[in-house]
Length: 297
Ligand code: SF4
Figure: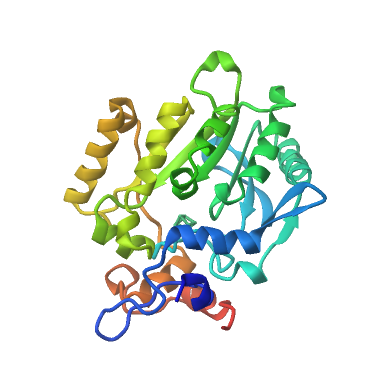
């Protein structure tokens, strides 16, 4: 049975003997295909994508954020709301022009010169993302940074995406682009990669392939690594750093180290895989609320 025939992929759970419950671990490539069917579509030649909201946040010194729907990983520590697991019942389709207008609105209201697509996995619908980046580069004086966040799966699957992004996020400053990719590496060893992402261990190399492609294509990027010792051992951290250094030492030197905050949806997901060492035994009110807001199967 293929993964798409097994029904929707929600969040990972472990049974009484610690075993991952069906359909986990999943194939992130198949999950990419299945999620695209829900969150990306083309109407009259215009590539649309689902989003839940547009807002301002303080990171990156103040940045307008478009919160996209749908991901091709199922990280157990994921802080994204239930739109990650139930993309069919969350969000509204927006055209690139509508996304751009909403981001500019937030920027103008707050005096920001920075914007990003965040939420779940922003590269799931590449034509839509590149169309937004086209609009950004038609008004370059309004921006000093446009961040593209990614887990690297689509970049690892589709060889041409890195060179497409290089048109908007060039490492060569004289090209005048404002794009910058932030690629998150969740795991570096097969077994913990599977435990953390809910995806089969055989796909552990995909994000590293993505790093290689971004580097080779001349993209402006940096890598964020989950180094939180509750999720990443020293051996795994060393493996990730070694592999990044093998591509180029500057990538290793510029790593952003990530420590994870137990946001409410993350707490529900972590408890579902038995990580009470992180959640604590007692269920807090905010975790209870996140649990109550979960759509029913
Ligand atoms: S943490 Fe990021 S990559 Fe992982 S499931 Fe959540 S949105 Fe996707």
